[in-house]
Image 1 (cartoon, one colour):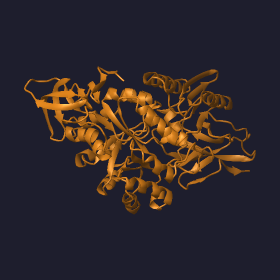
Image 2 (cartoon, chains in turn red, purple; image 1 turned 90 degrees about the horizontal axis):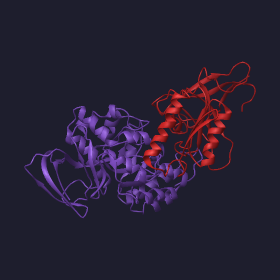
Image 3 (cartoon, helix red, strand yellow; image 1 turned 90 degrees about the vertical axis):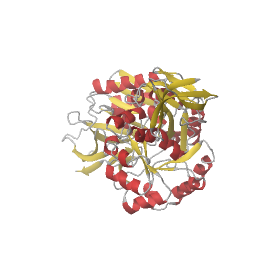
Image 4 (tube, rainbow over the protein chains, first blue to last red; image 1 turned 180 degrees about the horizontal axis):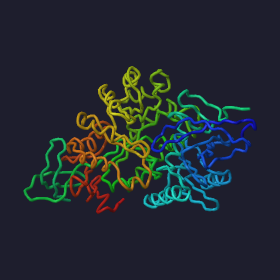
Length: 193
Length: 328
């Protein structure tokens, strides 16, 4: 995803209970083989255009504290493209594909295990009984906290605001990484050798 | 139907045992009685700004949880679904809301998409907004998030605001941290509310300039602690709102939670209830009963005025919640 000579990248740092984010910079490991860094909680985040076929926008995020797996949602303010955070490309793809197949909702993946709340109305609402939606949501929320180890108080809520460009400092839209202070796109790779 | 309970008259600031007679879904009489009563009746709670979509429920299912907490009405910007499906999305919200006995109120979303730096499923330009506002069911212009565009007098947003002004309907604001001359300009454009204030000083400046403040306690943003001190000085200018609520969160509580907390903190009960039950009705000119003779029978019966535990919720004269069970 990056030029092989990239050695420093932008990272979206999330703060629990806040909609704003902080801009963080991260030095890639020497070997240049960059995927995610679980120890330092540098995970991959992607936003995928759900209205027409386009390449995904990919960035890095810190603060979700997932130790494994991936979580995805069609609730992504305000355009509601597909947003995903995860620890491996396989799990990220799996979480997204669950949503694509069921035409919306939220999902969580841990290896072979998948949890999914389908939201078939516009990808963001369910027609099902309110009480059953609430309990399914609760089940997935707890799974992300207990099994994937997220330390956020509401991981899907935080996830849904990572694409809300109007709130600084940096967010990710389907078109790329965005600086909400200056109101323009910025590159993910900051420094190259 | 006759209900005997302690009648809470919020405006006259009195509580007395009364016999309330309902007929044809309306309140036809309220008579003071001598017998001591256990329960209390008062107008139901109103969420002055909530995106129904945030509950992940369609309106008809959302209302089934809301009535458990004594909520009888909501005011909503349908901009989540509008960003995805445009006019069709708004039409869906209206038609689904019509299927259930609950007082939903929707506005027309003026900021779809939110920015030009992302791909949305739809765009609502000034002509579309103007056309939508012809629908009487869409009773306000929803949150004008594009405050920089208002300050810069950009034609699209100004045309949307003008369309609402021509109809003399409320225009909702969204102006985090806006202050000074820019705030004045935003207010002068005709925008009358804000639900984004996060500090006492920020809200106070807006109130002093004539705005109404919606104290928000939602999923993401929780401003109640910072803004509740306003209750003492500005009870006529405040409303309560959630903005966003996930389904499990809505199961736990709604506007009732803010009422309980306010009263626990020692604020005057009549001021608090005016904020929760009356101010939104008056500001948005909602078709919601206020437990007066002749009104649509929208009200709640509660066990006491501390826990506000719901005995029954009435909407349009029908019981929509009884003993913690939803009836819709």
